[in-house]
Length: 137
Image (cartoon, rainbow, N blue to C red; front, side):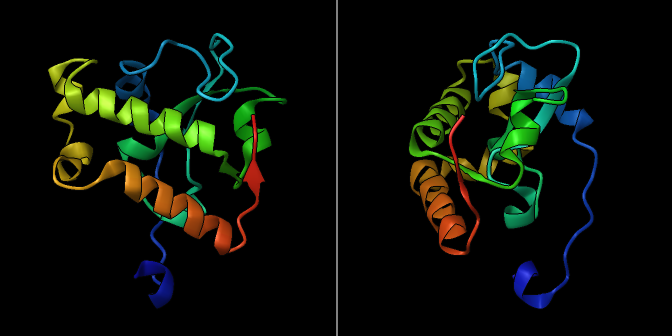
């Protein structure tokens, strides 16, 4: 709706999500699997320019620096294997695999009644159909 109305929200800092996402991470880049350094980025798995929101289900940790996965990915749509990995991470959060505080995070409450897998797959397909380029790590 926001995209159609032209009322695009302003981007906010993702720093508040860094600690929260780190709880569900092995301290490795979500995309390439390399250990994270001090220069870690919080990345929108599906680009912010497509989803226009900062929600925990769509945020991952990515390696930083000049040749980082986050910068190489840009506004591209990750492949199906990475999409499946994101879904599995989110389902793990909902199952409480990473602690109750993360499982009960306000950004994930809606997913208790929605089909998370179908939603993320539909968003990926729609983004590709709208011209967002595909990406493989």
